[in-house]
Length: 49
Image 1: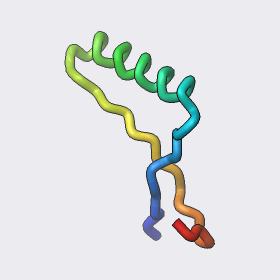
Image 2: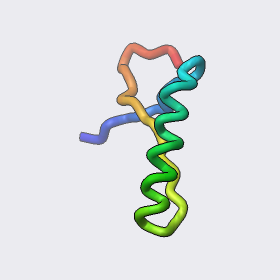
Image 3: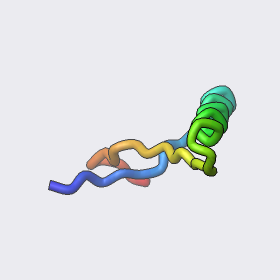
Image 4: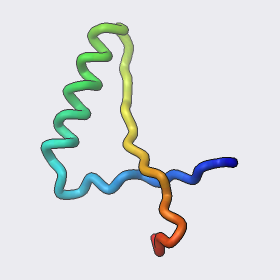
């Protein structure tokens, strides 16, 4: 069974976005390559979006 996901709405969540960016930088320093983290949430069946 395949799960459907959608982008997580991080609007008005500046502190969470900053935390994600800090983690991206930390991972980049460790791995030596650019990393982008993407926030997904499980899509709700009754979602109108």
